[in-house]
Length: 230
Image (cartoon, rainbow, N blue to C red; front, side):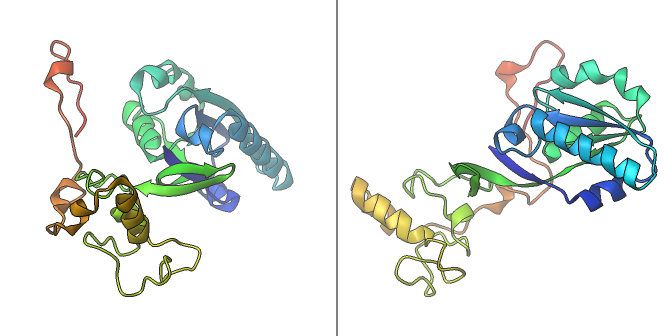
C-alpha cells in the first residue's frame, strides 16, 4: 500500500494562501488504511482549517468530499462541475491522486495535504514499514521474499556489509539487518544455493533512470482508447 502522512498545518495554510473557498478531498483506499487521508481525516483537517480561519480572522469556507480513489478518472470525474466553486482543492490523496486531479481538471488547482512516503506494510496498529521501492527489477524470488533494495540501508545485492553486527544494521540497533533476515529465510526454506550465485549490478534503467515508466497491455486496449501504465 502507498503510505503517507499529513503535512504540518502551518505548511498547509501557507499552500492555501489567500484561498477563500476550499474543498478538502479525501481518498478511500491506501491513505484511508494508514489513517492519513480518509473521510475521518478529511473531517478533522477541515475543522482545523475552519477554526484557524476564525482565530486568524481569515475568512475561509471549507467543504469536504471523499472519493473511492483519486487516481482513477471514473471516481473523480463527478467532481468536475463542483470544483468550479472553489479557489483551491486540498487533496489528502497520495502524490498520484494530486497529479491526477490537476491533470483531469487543469482549470482548478489541487494542492497536496499529505507527504507520500513509501510503499509499505502495516506492521501493527499504527505502524507502517517500507517494503518496496518499485524499482522495476524485482529479485524477491532470489532473496526469499525479502527486499534488499527497500530494507537494506545500502541496497546491497550480494550479502551484508561489514557494519552488520549480531543481526542488526549499523544505522540503528532497532533496524534488523536485511541480509540476516534473507539468509535465515533462505536457510529455513532450503534455498541457500540461490544466495551463493553472484547477482550482477542492478539494472536501474528499469527504475527512474530515463524518465517516467509506462506499461502498455495490448490485451487491455479498448478500441481506439488506450489503457496504459509503464
